[in-house]
Amino acid sequence: MLSSKSFRPAYHQCYEILRDKILTGELPGGAKVVEEKLAAELGFSRTPIRDSIRKLEYEGLIVEKRVVKPTEKDLRNIFQVRILLEGYSAKCAATFANEKDIQKLYEYVQIGKTGNKNEIMYANECFHNDIVQTSNNQVMIDVIDRMQSIIYLFRKAVVYYDRPHLIDEHEKIYEAIKARNSEAAESLMKKHLETDLAFFLHYMNN
Image 1: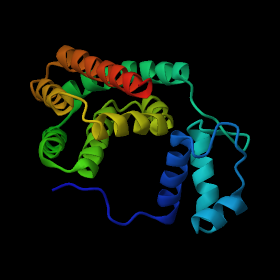
Image 2 (image 1 turned 90 degrees about the horizontal axis):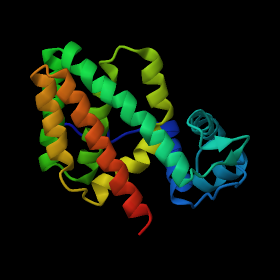
Image 3 (image 1 turned 60 degrees about the vertical axis):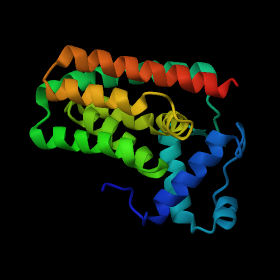
């Protein structure tokens, strides 16, 4: 069974901790990010702290060494871009994905049905990222990569709060890609992500 790696480099662990602190508000918007202070608090050396800050700057959560807290408008705007790009990526996958790619999507769907929360989170990430990779459009892949923190925020909400039909929708997208039905794959992916957005905003506002 596919699962997330039990060992992650210090940089990755540090990045995940800082990302979660920002997204949960523990590090509030406007807070100054100080390497030495974070290293002491989190028990990491300054190198992984520095690398993590650099990635969070790339993703737009830290600007000029201060925390940026995304507004609801920011989240909507970012997610609308994701809907457009991932919809197109699903269309590409139906055309260009090879049999190995398609088999991996099937495996991610099965984990979604039987796995624990962490396994489902990881399979969900792989399902979407693998589809994006099939676009073979490096500019588009890079744009999606810059959204990873925000995408994670949505992914965590829909998995941990059990959004209805999440995995059923993945299965329909997989089936459309397997059938080489590019129009259906694009439409299903867009509807899937629109539902994610609606679910998340409802969860956030309640």
